[in-house]
Image 1 (cartoon, one colour):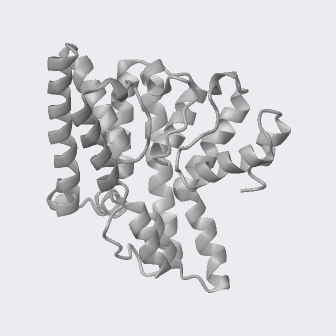
Image 2 (cartoon, helix red, strand yellow):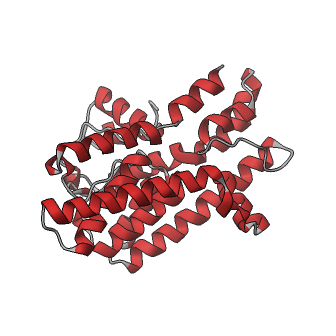
Image 3 (cartoon, one colour):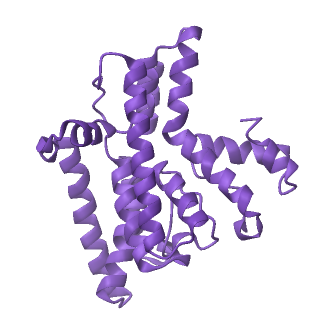
Length: 270
């Protein structure tokens, strides 16, 4: 993280302590930031900031599995801590091959996300930046207004890919490599999607009733923020601080439900 923070320091846009904070937040995909105006940063710095999150999301897993076993840390324990979902079965017999498969899936979905953002009106660099941080469920954006600065189509695509990124990667493997459509019966996936659907529709209905938003706008704001909170991505396309208090409480509970990463890290440490 110290080395990753050097471009921030040498670029002249933050000091040492701030750079360590920003890169630590990026690599852990926490999404917290000390920056109040990201739009003044050079595009190269914004790209590096997004790439840090992308590497932290899954790419760093390969390096960890290659090096940490020499230090006595098991590769499977690393995978348990890093891969979204509660099911931790081995995909293939060797952990290194498992990591390689996860990497291919991660890159492939990232490329699909970039293309979706391009078709929704983003330029190539911003599409790449946001695809990186969407797949990492980290939420760094190149705009102060986050995804609210982009088209409704971009926001819908972002919602879809946040759902994909927040799902169990073992299910992605079963679908993409084994053509196993039986994943639609997976209890974890069903629960995940049902919560998003029910809370999203309810929140959209409330926004139409209380804030008098049009159907598409209300549902877009509702589903986007519900998914963003539940997957801990932390993008925004609306100021949910202006939503009714009980809806803010619902979002807070979704954050607790969705933030399973701490439990997985604790399990790996044990």
